[in-house]
Length: 411
Ligand code: SF4
Ligand code: SF4
Image (cartoon, rainbow, N blue to C red; front, side):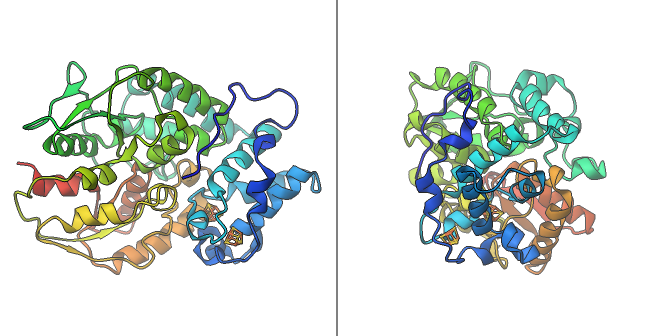
């Protein structure tokens, strides 16, 4: 997988900031074949070239060459991109769309007049999400989610379904293996997951212990910076990366385990020093193996690919393998499981109309499976799907892959 060269922090003064670092070679990789168009959620909804990967790459190329002036109207085409990277996964020419759109978004944020909504989002990310102690002391999970704008909950004022105590790493920062120690891994606790989905983390850690891992929770670890980078704040993201590398650089661990697809993708792209040691939970568990399952779980289950797992990390098979390994599960694929649900970090708050259109198509596909549970691997997807299913009065539940698998493997 391509990785970013380490970004300077702060960004270069003068010139054109981060956009200047976007290479002409990256942009020229697009040969305008159009094979990505039908895979792009915003093109599927609008049928407009300007809302397609090809149109956006053309726009950024013209901006970079100075052939088109920067305007707020044109910047809206960049805003409307989900950053889902489906285009990157299907592109036969190998366009590195993830790093193109991150640089484009950073440049848009640098050039445009600040709006109150975007200022609030950026400030919340820097002051709350990037500082876990502040986020924790900020109070209830719903308030935190609303403040950082991770979901349409913000629009509706609906409460989150599960208000559980936040995830707490064990005293001493180590969870021992069950049985013989075979591996030593670090675990990314992150910023939002421990507050909104502590049960997913708990299941993930228990599965790791069961697979013979000693799990280390680095005390000084901070938010990975994914939400900042996806929101165009590359400078803030680089600051967090530099702080985290102080923690990871000389530490002894085989793999850094991540159970949030957006964080895993960002770590793999943005932390080149970790050098292949970042692993999604499903990727790692399939690699090292689990003991035999303990019980049947009689459920009809479907799986929603998290974009940053399927498209950015190209991990599709492993979560499905884990689900299929659960005895009693009837697994059913939905139509287009790898099309975005419209969550995309802050997108559902910043672009609610397009997010809602994309979500409706996803809910139709989900309901047609008649599944009891939809499994996914990212907190943003979990919140978006829960919110949409609840609004429709559906009884379908949403679970992280760790929760479903833990039902069969743990006592
Ligand atoms: S991004 Fe890739 S698939 Fe899309 S038009 Fe360009 S070359 Fe073709
Ligand atoms: S990242 Fe997603 S929304 Fe953006 S251009 Fe690519 S496929 Fe379309």
